[in-house]
Image (cartoon, rainbow, N blue to C red; front, side, top):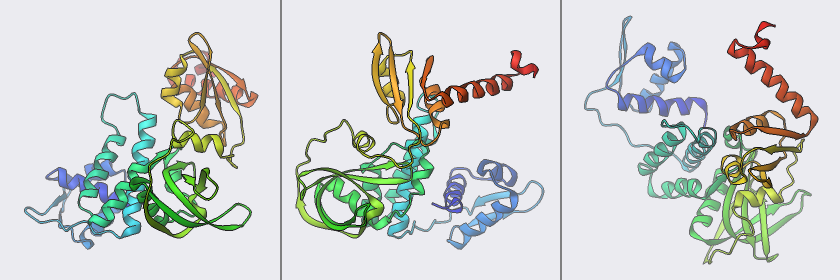
Length: 338
């Protein structure tokens, strides 16, 4: 979703949950200027939402008393975009703030998705709920999956329904070499990985499990009406299957580190992004293949335990650089004197 659309939903939510907002306070909550706030208010009015403005130094905004809000009107693409945006916000934030005790953006996103789905027409609600229920995200930066290259809302929605309903589908697929084939498959799950989306499915033609890039699936996806009993996936999760079987073209490094914590604990915290194996009593080894060396440092820090870098040497240097900067930020220690 575009940032203006996201702000509009946020603004409407704030106006609905609070009787009156001072303009400055509302702009601060949204992280925008007063001018941008006025434009966003005008946009809500164009959509039919009765927002009253009170001028003056202490002026502000509120919804008209007793006004009936118009229903949420979205088309198929917008319904899928809402589901994708809120889903990835929920999953991405939950991964980063999994130990926070307070309410998180992840929880708010999940609640918002549930509320918005309830006011959608039944046909669109089925699509939005299917996308949310059938997607696993292994992306560190969830926003990048929301900007996925060549992602068709029609394909995404149809595949999600096939996964949820256990219904066989047919589609045309273009391989990396340009060969176009017709596929007959039992869709299992959708996986969001960096700026790509994948379908994990059992290929009935090849009689084996496969992962298909969604940007290479041509619309329309054709449901066959034939239901199937889900087979056992040859991996713990669809996300693990994709990560294990897809050779990522953006992977530039092989990161290996030893963590002074039990494998079960580390796997629970960063297992979505790293392979974790036992390395001895109370320790484990993690392996990652990231496109850069910044997010592995965040992941290692999230383990909450001491760690030792095995490779690559550049990562150890990056740790020293970050450590010096973090120490200077506290205003204490020897680094603060430089």
